[in-house]
Image (tube, rainbow, N blue to C red; front, side, top):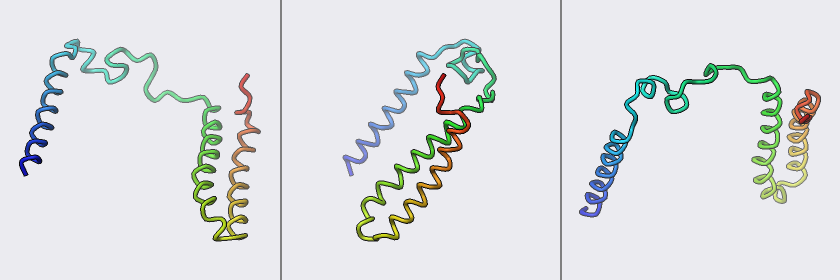
Length: 113
């Protein structure tokens, strides 16, 4: 019980100390408390500015490869137990991901120049 109270007191003292340190070193400029972007500096562009359409295709490509890796590792562990049905399901899953990769390729997201 004493160890728990000591730890709680140490955590509370640490949090209060960090708040005091933050109050001591923070800027008192008006822009630092009003503007949330870039640590008080004026933003160079609007916060909800649009991304170029090419980035959406690159996101699809990333998600295709990411989902492939997320599901391939657990599948590799159980494929010997499940047999041919697991192999067929994985080929179906990879076919769906291949549709996304072909779409991205067609959109030109793989051209870097």
